Image 1 (spheres, helix red, strand yellow):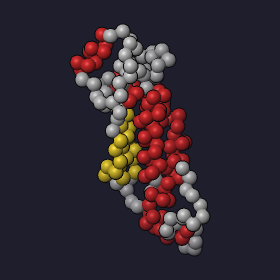
Image 2 (cartoon, rainbow, N blue to C red; image 1 turned 180 degrees about the vertical axis):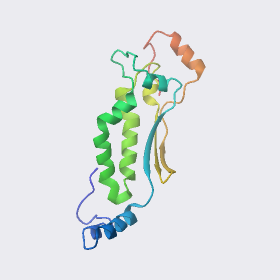
Image 3 (tube, rainbow, N blue to C red; image 1 turned 180 degrees about the horizontal axis):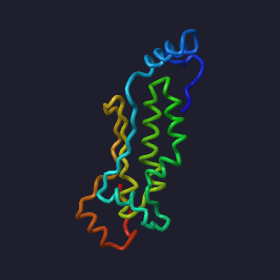
Image 4 (spheres, rainbow, N blue to C red; image 1 turned 90 degrees about the horizontal axis):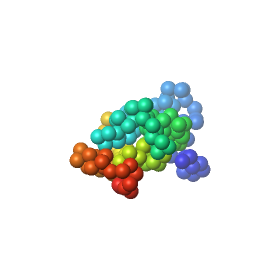
Length: 165
């Protein structure tokens, strides 16, 4: 989401355009956006998720692909970076990072993740860290399946059950 123009310029942002050395403006920018690394994480907490993601020999017959998170990240990295850049002068990029990680954990999981047991696509948890501290956590819509549940579902006819939220 672009930063609005006009009278909504964050305090101190207009001083970045004024006089001063490059380094003095960098100091002003740091005062606006804060200090510390900004890191977004998507976690898929299913017993079989790592195998589904990393085993490139699986053929999912049009129902998702291996390396589903990596492919989604590479396919949309420009959009994720733009979302972060659009909010960097207002909140240090936090809003854009949150938006990007939620998009990756939800919409992109539904687009790329294999169906298998019906829960993988709903198992993306999005988190954002600033300076090493957790500042946002969106839990997955689907809980982790137990080994017993996986065994029961493995014995059913493929795709004979609805997706489990």
